[in-house]
Image (cartoon, rainbow, N blue to C red):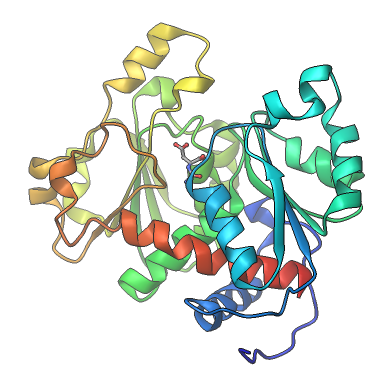
Length: 309
Ligand code: NCD
């Protein structure tokens, strides 16, 4: 049994990165450090339901692995749109009311922004937002930040270039908000106009005094960054095929880009990747995306422990 300082439970749901302050982040990361690689029985008898209305590999399986490693049990549906009563016309709210009777925590992925908050409003158990359309993906942001800290020592003072689909990429929205809590962070948003970062996030960063700029040229900043955070163009969110095509031709990380990247910098990606990072980059020690994915289990153990422990 891992011994952790007993902290009062401070989280009812995990819906947005906005809920976290530095103290809570330290708590999550300390729990992740203590639980990484362990087996425990602290959540024995507790049940987690995964309700996924959109595809997932890493998020769902790492949540399930985390719950099992803590001694809990897992139920769920990975194709909730087809294999739940949604197909019969049941509302999300009614489904959540039901699943609240069967589980102690609901991990929800949905195609609509705000779905997790809607679920939490009617749930009688904890709800975790595992991605709500183009909205947020807060547990991904936690594991991303945990990765930056473990790779670079600290997130304070980093210059991060977010690349790819910054308009629909929910992991970007959540991570930028967590980084806002750190000293001296600079952000460059590298994307063509059609997928540039939204004005709402820009306004929040400006209000927090975070220096950031927008460009469509990675070569302008590559030699000064500590982190390149590349993302997949979110094909499923485009209504205009021309916009998708314009976005798809955007920034690609290959060996030539890596030559300009500082020696101590890292390349991250929430995965899955399509062709926005060439596979030739994988063998470069600065390619951190598979190490990043591995951190998902420890972080989700920490989140489940915080919610249910
Ligand atoms: C991302 C997601 O679903 O938002 N993947 C993930 O959870 N690791 C990124 C993506 O789908 O491109």
